[in-house]
Length: 450
Image (cartoon, one colour):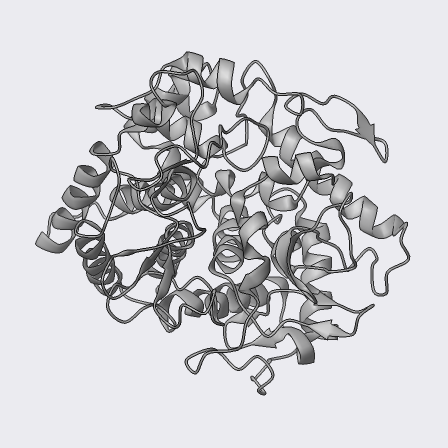
């Protein structure tokens, strides 16, 4: 991956190298012995992995706001208060899974989320959008970078992907669920998506700050993990963007269309070899790719083939890294032995990230189960912890992370559930505004025929 490509990827890659810090007191102790049951069949193992990983968003949630902590070790030396907007959106979806599977009661989950949205509705926001990081006790913005101290539209989209699922799921007539839906609706309606076209341009900009204006200057063009932002921006009812913003902004770049084959597998969109696997995961925690098509791609084909290319690269292992193979694959953004990096076939340093293969369960269930059993049965002494699998490992360097990241833990719970029941897909795709946005952008989906 060259510098130009890196700069076009999410700001998290650019700014997160310094994140890898000392462990905080409240952090999970990854090296402590955690009971690891043996002899589990596939269903029982999936239950265990989902439930254990969910604990990151429940036991380790910020005690005041209920939001997801950015990570289980110190972020930029800001201390214990850093919570993450996008990771919280993923956590909300994990909490819905927990309620549906009765790990927690529905009422307990609803009250927890009501506390969270009551916090969010008073937290700092910018034209309705939230910052990447905030203080989980006060709701004040914590800068993600020197000039990134305001709205982060991509993180806001991840948050509302989760909140809209919650609005659909908690549909009871009681006061708690009614209040929860109402507050989510108010915040959703207040997002000024059109503001982020920077004066009517036909593209969405990632950041805006009251202190620095548009200085980050990051127009978001595809294909990458930001599709959900464009879908939600088109779905807004008070401040929507036009379809031209999608077709002339998102779908116009020299790395949007691909169409070439890699390892004999065709890739419709995106960077050569597909880029990090989270490209096919973050937006599709809510967006159901089954039968989802527009004039540019069939998104089931896109996501499945992206996953297969990533796995095939690890099997062929051109760099001869230790441990790679049919049961040990998955390159995506994560911590690594010297910081944080966006791992992919074109940026491979030998680091395997469990979330990559596990969050690909809908696309490659048999291959993902092979990887899961290897991570759990063969490497579990090193990888398994009180919050599920640690973030990453590199056998060539004899390195194993001691950290967990919200944006890596959340997709494990959610995408395994989408593989098993389609729960979050059904919820998100049933949102009336989302259906309207998809129609506006020219998408086809089985959900749009109802």
